[in-house]
Length: 198
View 1 (cartoon, one colour):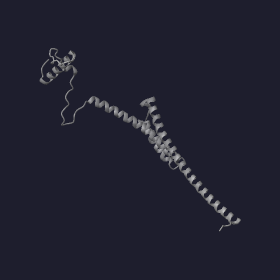
View 2: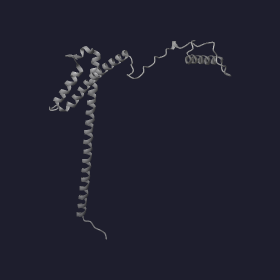
View 3: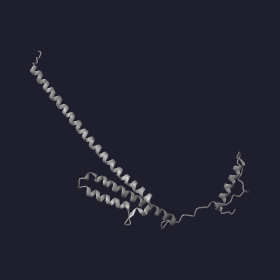
View 4: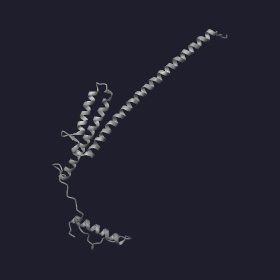
């Protein structure tokens, strides 16, 4: 049996179809909007992280350049390294920014202060390493207690001279120079084992 639809039925079906399509479109728009907001937040985080990294690196580079350009004498204030003062002062300023209208710049100020402290501590570490290297080079090496001292290295001029009159037995087919070199090696070994004077 065939079903007949009236115009009223067709209008009602069209309304249902349109409301379902609108509902699907609204759901899609909400999903796309949520995804866009999430990507925007991730992009903002990535941008902020990049800016903080650039602040640390830039301030550390600038402080190193200034120390190299102006020397240690001009990079101190009140007997303290300028980088340390800038680093501590930058952290204090960043802490003060956390409550004001400029609180969004506080992480950047912390990063700049970290760059100044990194430059100062790098210089301090370099100086300490250089002093340690100088001290260890002048002090020499002493083994810990309970271990025997290392023997003195053999100096090349202290080796006995080869004895030219001693020859090893001839090897069939060997060149005379090889026979002579073999004889010299045997003589040196014999002298070192038996303590024979050359």
